[in-house]
Image (cartoon, rainbow, N blue to C red; front, side):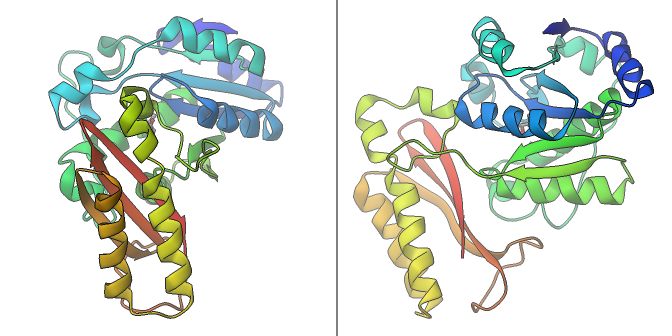
Length: 277
Ligand code: PAF
């Protein structure tokens, strides 16, 4: 596995493409876990070459303390990727991505309002900007994103379509711990006590999804699910909402394909999760 630090180092991608090989991109912010490795596995299965990017993007953090505390572990991450058949790890310094004078923001309307968009101002603009840059810098044909960040996945699909970026987006199922907790780099920051409470988020979503499918009253179910999460020991539920699965429009009745999405705080850690309905 080669390590690239500059955009110029990515020129090797043109050589691969000239010889007819397909190129996959797996964007990450590092602190890798089995969820990331499943994206790499899918990329490996579908493309000839795999690029993993490792960049803790300062522009998508709405709170400086969250950026400061974000786990950074390049040595451990590259040791995890090495045996997975990754061809290139792109781990640029911030000045390579945002040189002096950088002045452009990619902003997707509609899908970015509500849910994480309301509680993390600027987050999706920062995410959309870095993802667009990574697509254009790598010129990969296919990119892989986890379904855990469901709102992010819909935004990425939209921007690729709107900007005619020639890349196919593949969403991959959330990887979970045996007790149901969605894998996340943020789980590392849970205290042992909070770690035992954390699976309650997925449990509440799963239970609510079953009740929704059974045709019970939506508002009652959402209220009960929020209560189930705080009763389990979460400090607060930021949002828990039923949305259309792709447009993310709020839904008042079941019938169309839907997603139940939530974010909740456990001590200093904000966890998100979602399930199909
Ligand atoms: O999902 C993430 O880890 C990040 O938002 C991404 C897509 C790597 C962009 O920084």
